[in-house]
Image (tube, rainbow, N blue to C red; front, top):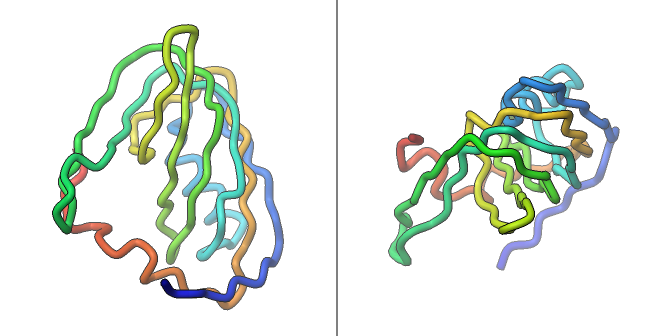
Amino acid sequence: MKVMNADLGKTVVLKIESGEDLLGGITDGAKKAGILTGIILNGIGSISKYHLHVVETSNLPPGNIYWKDTAPFDVDLINGYIIDGRVHAHVAVSNEKATFGGHLEPGCEVLTFCVVTVAEAVDADFSQTDTYAGQRPRE
């Protein structure tokens, strides 16, 4: 286990509009707010398309399964980190039949809106938290 200090600076609330890409909206909003290192505290809203991945194997680095579809879902939770300007977010979504989640990928299209709260992590270094990022291609 590693303990990292993360003093919180400014907190911003991003509203991502209908038709926008959810991951792109978080990335652009954090950049516009000047947050290169931060913590995604929460998020809610709805999407009309999803693109997610989850780990598939227990070896390191793990394999991934990607899936996407066009279907309306409520966004129950978004959380994660912003590491050197790159967003690593997880999302949980639900409808009347199912609740599921995974790593947020490009292609999650916002239906009505999504509101995401991001806190700046002043003088924090999260670069070692996402050990296997970039080692597998994104679908």
